Image 1 (cartoon, rainbow, N blue to C red):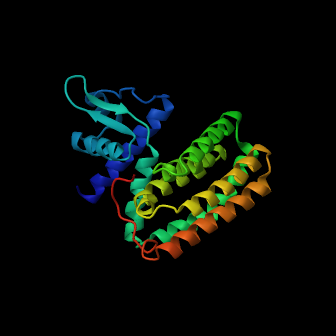
Image 2: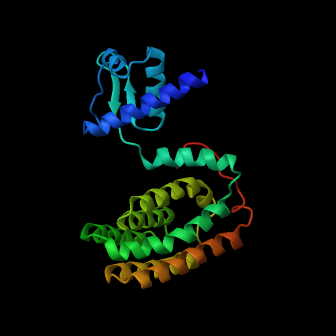
Image 3: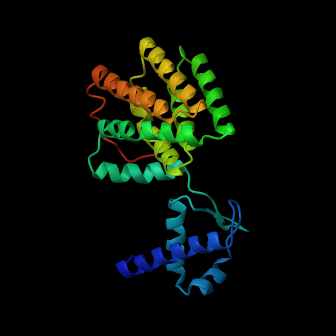
Length: 242
């Protein structure tokens, strides 16, 4: 598609998103029929379809086939963001070490925000997840439950960008980290640190939550780098995260 038409398709996609929000459309709602959309946005059929394909790739809509099909509103998920991010990071020649450094930078503040803002529902979810983590300490499920605890903590921060970025980072590093795993000693150490983080969050102790999380993520990064130096130099590759 020529550059001018591609730009117009992007503008139409942006207009469709604005209309979805303006009309308070929810996931599962159908958008207008194609003929109505052509009149609404005053574009050629090819341009409209290009705009809809772009939105589908971004997770904003699903294009259903067959009688009664057409564009149906969806909601972009963390996986959609992680996929776009991994594509950019591949061209930036980013490795796992860079993602670990990013986690070290944001995780302590994320924990502090959670201590200040976590709701009762957040605290209950974190407590349940920690209890599951203790049960998983000697099983293959430990790493996945561990990631889920950090995801819950990110969303408990009250800042959706913390939750989104934390969950996306876990999707990007999941396969790489699972190649290595944690030793029994490292698992025990992480459990102790997470117990302190959780207790600080319960007590609304932001400084304590920040301090314990900083110790945890720094120690985890050092452990991974020492145990498998070649792992942390692996490059991020675009694909289907997780």
